[in-house]
Length: 114
Image (tube, rainbow, N blue to C red; front, side):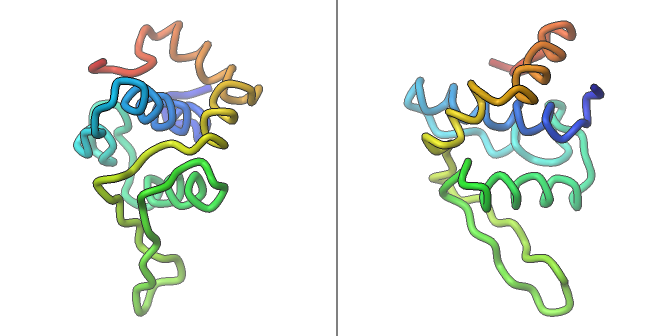
């Protein structure tokens, strides 16, 4: 696995949002931005990841906005962005998520900044 692997990035996003939910705090949108130290990815890849986490039912509190001239909708994160129960289950029970978690543990950076 690599730091920019889909499942590594999805794990970071979902684990962060789950930690925010448990602590009762709103997520820091700077942490979730594509150029944050935690993600460091292109805008297109960032939108791809968030779009699929949302359409797969793992996130709520965001929207997909159609944009003239674009094939895919733009991702708009809302202040109420959070992980869903389905997202928590995916985070905890999916084998790819477990591999991503193990990979990040070896780097000692599961959720940088927390």
